[in-house]
Length: 393
Image 1: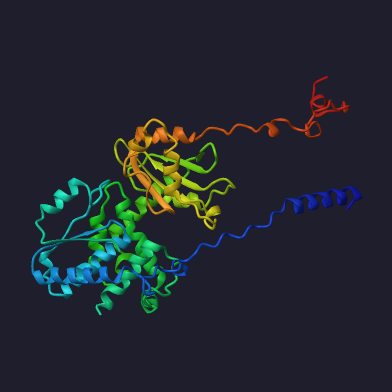
Image 2: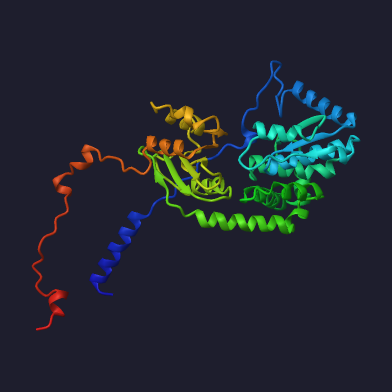
């Protein structure tokens, strides 16, 4: 090796070492069980609900079973809502209510249980009681509790107090099977048809999570959603003028915007970025359904990012009544995972207010560069160039 090669190699090595970046440690996200629970006036832990409310719920369920009349269950569309619905169904059967007196109502696409259309449909079934659900006998319901809890709080949950010890159930069925079941149950309600009844029927007929893993209709729904996510997940993000919100716009009849928001929130990394928003223009006619997630880089921030407060504060900057036009379904859900359904025109006005897609103006100090840092191109004294070398003489 010549001295010149050695010098070149040494220079390249030095540059490579200089460019090497030390990976930053990911911010630690608090586990559900690590959060200090609420306590009552006597110091007792209030979980999962106040003792008085639990007693009222227990009494109400017993009354439904003892009445011998029709009880209507209204389970939510996702894995935790369906699981709690099946638990209630089996509880009523265990208490003596015949299955012919247990009816089910599944809320239509784009609606909530409070909409007049849904309340009329529920009343038309003439139930004695309506039981909405969101959240030994242990053998038939313990795995449902695991599915529901993982569906609501995530699959990294540590089963520590105040939760009951369900580790034997997790070992019996395996955590992987539980998590796969959650994914399969969530798939049908995300399809364009919003086929919640398929997930409900499969879960009600199951005796364990493995019964769900080979269900052809659940598997087909998951394939459909995976393909739809892949089709839309590469939409380019645009940023608000302050860089705090990244917005991706898609057009899909399937409910894939929450999945894509979660994916991009774990991928995008910026010092300014706080919220990732995916806006779906195709889920409901004339509406924009959007989902927001906190960017991974700020999940450990103190004070924490609150999506709902941030979005409402942004809308409050409007002077033309935008807050009212966005309606009651704007910025709802959790502070870490929010979303909403708004009229398309109002949503576009919100994007204009945030100045999404506009490039930030350069600061004066950036525009005035030091003369010493200006790059100049000088005419090379070298006459034997590639251009004239191959030139015909």
